[in-house]
Amino acid sequence: MVRLRFAPSPTGYLHVGGLRTALFCWFYVRQQGGKLIFRLEDTDQKRLVEGAENGLIGMLEWAGIDLDESPRSGGESGPYRQSERLEIYNQYVRKLLEEDNAYRCFCSLERLEKLKDEQRAKGETPRYDGFCRYLPREEVRRRTDSGEAHVVRMKIPEIPETMVLNDLIRGSVSIETSKTEDQIIIKSDGFPTYHLAVVVDDHLMKITHVVRGEEWLPSFPKHLLLYRYFGWDPPQFAHLPLILNPDRSKLSKRQGDVAVEDFRDQGYLPEVLVNFIALLGWSPAQDQEMFTLSELVEEFSFERVNKSGAVFNREKLDWMNQQYIQNLELEDLRRRLSPFLAKTPYAGEDVTLLRKAVKILQPRLVTLVEIGERLSLFFDDNPEAMDPEVLRLLREDTSKQVLSVFIEQLEFIENLTEDNFRSVVKNVQKATNIKGKNLWLPLRYAITLEAQGPDLKLMVDFFGKEKCLRLVRRAQQL
Ligand code: GLU
Image (cartoon, rainbow, N blue to C red; front, side, top):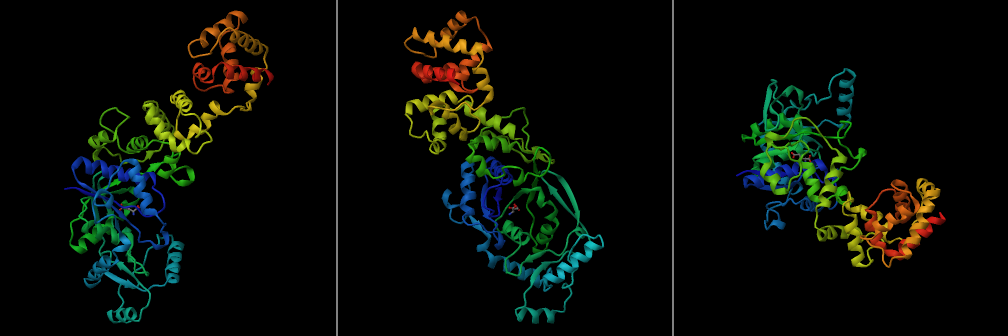
């Protein structure tokens, strides 16, 4: 049975790259009938963030990803936390030390800094020089027993060799061991580093496929060596391509949003973000862009994940979100809008009117958070005309004519509705001989103060005759 893990560090938010990793894992396990476990990689005590675990799991749930072996799915053992497994790592480090595959290193930070500086000055890549690798056993015991601070390093073989990884995405990848150094596996605070913990945990947790970002590719020789030292078979690996900004730099917080939480808060639908992120690096066999979760589970394969970086195209995300919103049932849209609406001044407006307004806005909403600013048109009584273009047009002679004839025409009808608005405007056209843009735009500006916006006849219907009269009269004074 396939067993995959999502193993984030507790950074305080779920990075979109992390969501992609989790999604690819989840698609695969649900397709294969396997298991996906969650493991918090919290061994870096300097980078702990309060509440990170719940936040991460909450965002996965928001995206529709359920985890196995966690209390929320009826399991008991997970989610796993590395900080609770220190004794396990220590046990395996003892084995490495006993079998001479690791050694204690007492080098001070000053010595290491100096070494780095010297190597850089010579144009070399800084790496540990193995100073403590050959300390006499007696000395090591004495210094350890006296409680001297130290780390534990794994040994890279003395005779360089080429390590080969058969990656599910990249095929065969080779790296010389001479490119790596004697990696620290236990820090001076007694916590393991990622490299040791990941290998021990993936083995003990019976992980069959390790799926992670490309940035971990250079680490695989160390990991394969550890598997060899322990006498374990390594799992399969899939290193996912980078996610890039449109300028092809690595997607970073500085250039915009990278936290899934940000996208949720801006009103992107979870199924849209999932659909969009699934296409970052994975390409479906057929020419299709919109996928449901179950289609993604069915279609996904590691063979169709690209090696090259995937550009995060915000316009495409917006387009997709708008498409999905347009296709939602009105009730569903209202339900999804409600947390956003609650934060606007319009939360207490009449339900029927709100419903009508949402229906009018549905074809134009790009994100749910826009609802606040969009509703102001419907419910704010005296919006101010700020746009100089609006003011200029309303002050033109033809506009003034259109508006005053429109007011005259309204005298003849009882109600202004979606159905009779067109014929009223036709009458204005006949009476003034003004048509096209010069006829419609002043009316739109007068009633909505916007050059673009929802369908004018729907707005007019929403406002009704009295309010339209008031708005047009106000526009005459501008
Ligand atoms: N904790 C690592 C990270 O957050 C996970 C890498 C892995 O999946 O092996 O990047």
